[in-house]
Amino acid sequence: MKKSLALFAAAALLGGCATTNMNSKKETDMITHSVFFKLKHPSGSAEEAAFLAEAQKLAAIPGVGTFQVLKETSPKNEFTYGLTMLFKDQAAYEAYNNHPDHVAFVQQIWLNEVETFQEIDHIPFGE
Amino acid sequence: MKKSLALFAAAALLGGCATTNMNSKKETDMITHSVFFKLKHPSGSAEEAAFLAEAQKLAAIPGVGTFQVLKETSPKNEFTYGLTMLFKDQAAYEAYNNHPDHVAFVQQIWLNEVETFQEIDHIPFGE
Image (tube, rainbow over all chains, first blue to last red; front, side, top):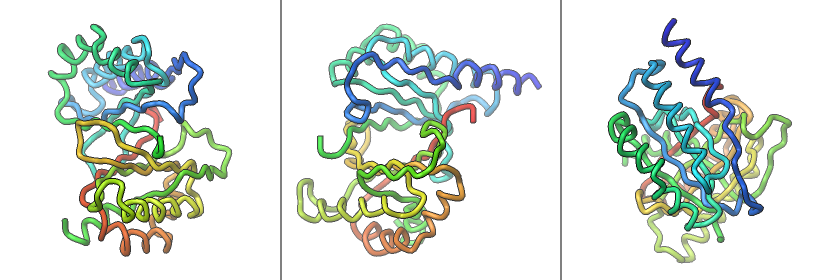
């Protein structure tokens, strides 16, 4: 029950997938940055919910557009969650990477709690 | 990679740049199916272009929504292209997987021309 409640709370927090795209560039022309991962925490645990709640805060970093927490569903990989966000250009992407809130998340949370991950970035073919 | 394994894994493939979302479900609620890959062909080769042109034809298979060919840009993996498409539900996804045009693409083109790949599927967290 505790686990269910924790997950439900996280879903309430994260399910909204805030859209924070603050520029006029078409989303289809932007850089999509994504990372798919498996946590060390058990599925449905309070620790998992806490991790996802912290990850959601990355959406507030300047330059981050259309941020989403994803449930990875393919049986053909080991990942269970994903994060995806849009950047209008490489400079915005790098500013996010170097932002102290992102650096702190990586050093204090990500490196301790993620078992395995894969980053995938893409732009539309032809750009 | 064993052909049988590759066939099974690749059996969830994709297609082009056309938007063929023919239902009223919100895109954010749909199943996103994607595969990121590296071809055996040299970058910029005619063989590469021919492969991508064939892949785009998958967009015409019934049930495939919002199909895109992607350029993978992260230095943190070995993939150079991606295909992504939306499905309104698991039944539409499976119908695509089993469609003879998809099966023929996998058997006649994908298995011969792709060096390595990773499938990633996702839905919004909380669904």
